[in-house]
Image (cartoon, rainbow, N blue to C red):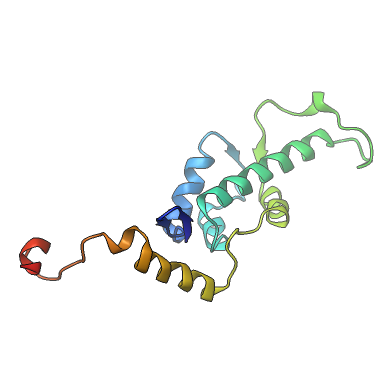
Length: 143
């Protein structure tokens, strides 16, 4: 959950993370070993912004890999002429990206619970109409 003023936005679930990744990576060429469902599973607690940063880090890893291809010496200056116009992101690029980009919200469920409680008490969710089960509208249920 991320708070913007009095607005709280919860973290995306696995399905939403897969959709966000697909949107971010729609113009990228992905190697056959890149599976968005697996990436979505591995990115628990990642916000949309975290996912964008992860994809950017993977793209930079692909550029670094291509610029050093065939040089043999990792300390040699990059050969930018060797970088293809359309890069291909591999699973290894994403593994490198995971070393650079972590979730901005940790696994600390107490923190998430505190944020959700704050949202219930002070945020927008206190002004949202309550869900009513059955066939009556929310207005009819409160009268």
